[in-house]
Amino acid sequence: MTSPLDTDIYKDPGVARFYDPSHGWDQKRADFDYCASLAEDAGSVLDLGCGTGELIAALAQDRRAAGVDGAAPMLEIARQRPGGDRVDWVHGDARTVRLDRTFDLIVLTGHAFQVFLTDADQAAALATIAAHLAPDGRFIFDSRDPTYPAPKEQTKDESHRVVEHPELGPTDRWCVSTYDTASQILTYTNTYRVQRTGETNTASDQIRYTPYAELAARIEAAGLTVDRWLGDWHGTPYQPAAKDIIPIGRLA
Ligand SMILES: C[S@@+](CC[C@H](N)C(=O)[O-])C[C@H]1O[C@@H](n2cnc3c(N)ncnc32)[C@H](O)[C@@H]1O
Image (tube, rainbow, N blue to C red; front, side, top):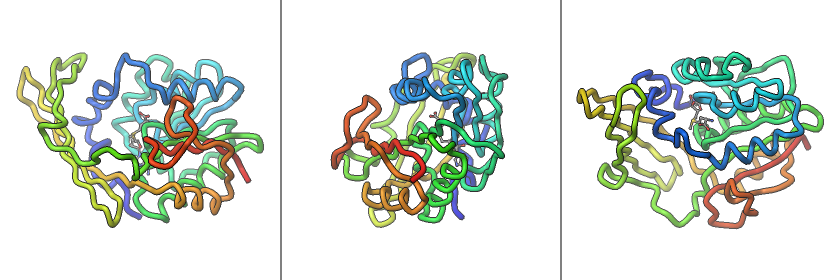
């Protein structure tokens, strides 16, 4: 099985520490808001590929919560955030992990589903969802639509911006990416250069884009069914060439 776990973008602590500052720290994330509203009537939530744990730590205030991630440095940040002590953090692989309990809601946010690069890996992740859903439980995840009419590749100049790290200060950040249309896999390299010291951290990774029909077939094959398809995290119904493909479903 291939996986980004074999590379180091999340496993390299020097890079992982820039995840939160680069992904809208202190800004509202629409995916988190949507999942929080879905969780309102859920007594338990599982976050697969929870990363630095911001969402699941917030949801753990009012319910039982578990967060699974394959990268120790991401979980280290998660454990230390406010509310982190309320979450059951699991260092594990979302394709194979089996907790001995089920959940009312299972979420994969931040396009975590796209880290599964092969059909077998996607099927394995969906099997994990099916194995952990309570009889009336629901799941939700997002995967970018390959037909969305925006460039997938970026150069250093196009992607450069300055992120503010709370301890390290202003940091130049850029992402160089190439897209292979045959495999629908994007390969990207993130670089962070701390302005004050010049310290530079670089890591590469890959994500897969999956067409809607293929995703729908794979979800069904996993014994799951989709009640609603969204095209973004604001609740817009899915239609072709949407930004995202977001299934909300349950056990078939
Ligand atoms: C794009 S980040 C999303 C993090 C978080 N869900 C968010 O919304 O910010 C993807 C996460 O998936 C994790 N990951 C990658 N492959 C994994 C696997 N096979 N099992 C569990 N976690 C994995 C990475 O370590 C990373 O934290």
